[in-house]
Length: 199
Image 1: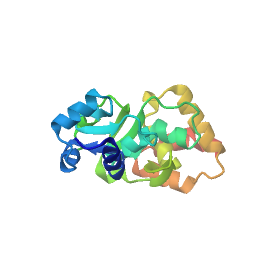
Image 2 (image 1 turned 45 degrees about the vertical axis):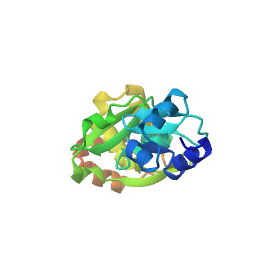
Image 3 (image 1 turned 180 degrees about the horizontal axis):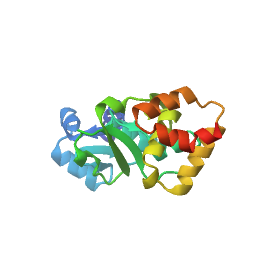
Image 4 (image 1 turned 90 degrees about the vertical axis):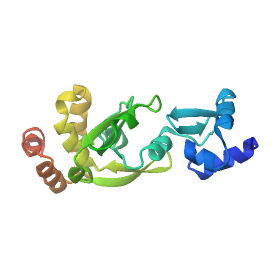
């Protein structure tokens, strides 16, 4: 088996999370993987995905980026990022294409909650941000608010109300974008009813 420092370097070169096929290509074979698991050097984060246990640079967002590169952070995760919610989400809320394999999200760690969208609506309001020094795909504030209105009955009432209040108070809000997205996402009436009174 390769020395520990070499294994650490290989993981670093692969963004700290590796698939089984990448491990094999790096000459870390099945028996080696089993030994590394038994010695608690690596940990399986999902079927076919592994990361180093003592990696001080490892963060959940890095794992999310590696396992779901096409996903977009949304809903409670985006609300927390924008400061519209002070409640740390228990799960990573991810917007994904409705045709993606649902089994990919049945993982033990990190906890994820997928929201399935038609591909034509997926990129509305897509932007980039930085979380824990990692670049992420995330919905902008206006798309996030539209999504909250769409899923309002499934949201915690306190989180929902705080999100709307904080958006209304936000001096950087973009009402034209909000209305444009609302029309595309079919929540225009909700925007006018719930937010219009504050504007």
